[in-house]
Image (cartoon, rainbow, N blue to C red; front, side, top):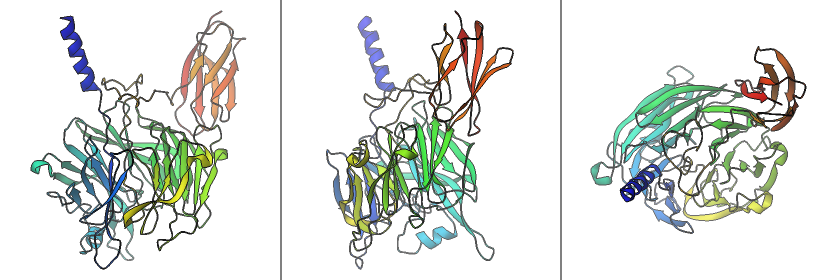
Length: 509
């Protein structure tokens, strides 16, 4: 009986422990083959090897901005350029055309040139939780007014549902262009991060000309939202802003960069879907370096910002992130024949960072050791040569190997990360006191990484006993030795306007 019980527990463990998900292990890039244009065709990068294999493929359309996904073993399933969806055989899947309908779809997608839809970070594909073989593609669509002069805006937020078990594994679109939201200030910065329960997904889309960020939650039971977060940091741009957004691999940071606003860094609560402690850094490029991209190293420590002709590294663990900035390199003038300056970035499954060029070239830049400080990160320009040309965009992937938050309030489904992929929970929305209970009145307060705020101590009757102004300190010492024994409330109000955070202090001598 003991043996049978142990076996049953073993199988429960297997069910609740996800396999290492290789849903981003194959990348498709390039342009529709054209006999009159040298270097056109598709490039496939396969990371299912110690060194990535780069090869030519005959793609059926341009792959600029794209949503792509593989199965759990890393084999390609489908990819979309915002106009159409193709399967792993590089054929249009059933009902896979007519994505992002409207006047601009007709201009970009139905010209006979097999062009991409004109976004830069406007689509992303995710597995539908607990629906084997089913996937959801979220995508942004442009709108043009009928008035004169016509006004074009990124307005429509859609989802499309795909079943890759249909047609003997060749796939089919079950429903497409389902409207989630309309807002004429949507920004071309769509991304996603896994919920702290290890199963669901937050889909994150900012609204320009405001501090709004829309969130949706993809669950086994449907798509919930929108949830609207006010971050305290407004975006001055809308539509295409020549920037990029990225989550850190551990899901604790959300970074967005564009030349108009700078580099915004938020802490993120994967349980609540909250953006906390927003900090804005100056844009590191000059006035002419308007195009920018971002990626974060595998340890979630180092942030990389590309500013057209310059590449920078920041230390996100530093007390002063802006002061940690290091210039890694300046564009060296290489051409193919167009200039190979720097644009979007993406962390690869192998732990390197690939950087695209905002021109049609055969080259990607590479950061080989992104978890090393300064120039030791080994940034090499035009380091990876592809068999065909590609430009502007990397495939837009989330961090698929991010799972549950053990010990967090939302870790309630019994899902456990595979060995080596466990992210420990460290609440960003709480303050901690130690020692607590306290016997000598010397209390250390651990604060979230906010840009300062106000710390106050109250008794249980609500009377204010002490107040302190905090700058950027994470650890702050308070002296409560003059207080009588009892229970007190320590409250911290972040300077960014987010809700106050509090903890109970017990003094007993």
